[in-house]
Length: 109
Image 1: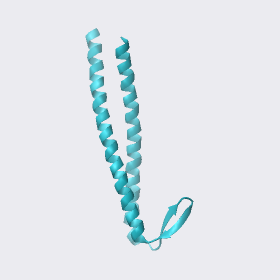
Image 2: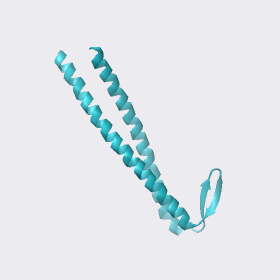
Image 3: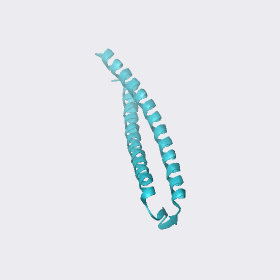
Image 4: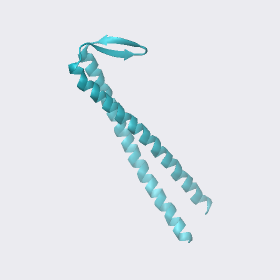
């Protein structure tokens, strides 16, 4: 195997590692969205509402908390979409590179 092919294989491994990181981040964002949705569903049924700021819990108006949660959800959804676009692009790059490597290996046989 020549150096160019070895370099491409190394690049493919790097892309696959980055894909794993993206999947991990994607799962974290999806979990955050589920948590925010759960909080938004529970909010109308709750009495007093509180928000944790740093190490303390502060009483807040339901409407303010609802706005804050909706804003956070919007931001997390945007991040999730961004990650998904990057993941898709990276998958295409990985597929292309893998095909290129396989073609080189087949030619050598």
